[in-house]
Length: 375
Image 1 (cartoon, rainbow, N blue to C red):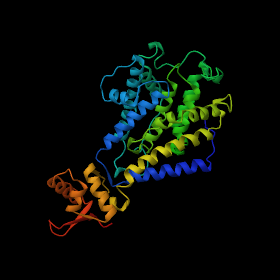
Image 2 (cartoon, rainbow, N blue to C red):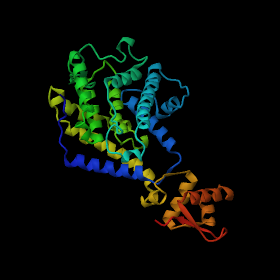
Image 3 (spheres, rainbow, N blue to C red):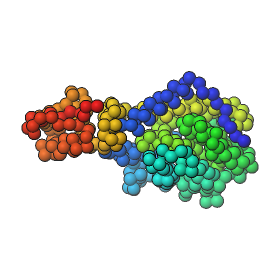
Image 4 (cartoon, rainbow, N blue to C red):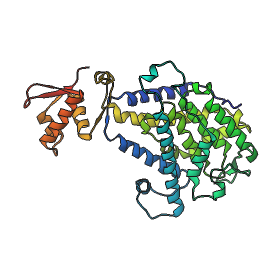
């Protein structure tokens, strides 16, 4: 039975604490941008671009963005196909998340004692193989798509030619993956923080190297599931692929250092890798946190709004930020803040903010003073 070896040290604790802090700000923010979908789309493009670039894809960020949006570009057939495939992988993960999320109990149902109403996500080899199918379609031979490898492989350092990693024999792959999946589904392992489970999932699949090609993308994609379905989807606004690509040397060196600890995958101490992975997640979530922090500095506002979250347009964000900075604003202030916007549009924005309960209006119409609700 597989059980990962690692130590929760001060660095990992610090990272987990930062992850929790960022998650709290993002999840509890009462005022969030109406263009959240745009943020999610940006995260998808970053994931697809950097997730394929780290494997040698030559397309630019702009070219990948066009492909993700459904446009055509001029480039090598393989580069284009790799991007299309990885976009399909991201869509598959979102589908798994949405199907699982749709079957979760409603907030009022969660008050019921834990039981069948709190169904845990079921991890499976089928999911891993499906991710590989989507990753390698039209890239490798059809006979290899979604199938575990049947031959021994070695990974070499491209600069020195030395063997960097010798994955386990092909005959062991099905058993190793099955043991790993059993661990993921084990109730005891579910007590481990999802960020750590995600890190372990990525490393184990990289180390087993279950397929003839596409293992890096498969392992990074599958590793998102423990975050998505165990309460850390963070609105799906983040992408770890960019961090891995921008720090590629450290990324591969950390994997290599862990590989070298033992010839037995399941006896390797994963502490160093977990440190690296949780640091990457910390940096990315902190970046997202800063996007919403300025809009909602006091979570009491959400309580004032009855627990709901209000989606703001870019204009409304500017109005709210001005009120936060100066305590409130009058119509002349709003006109200076939004010089290219008509008075009628400004009035409608202010009225919407008043109607939602985010701000309050004091005084007569012409000399009215608008400020955030008193929390």
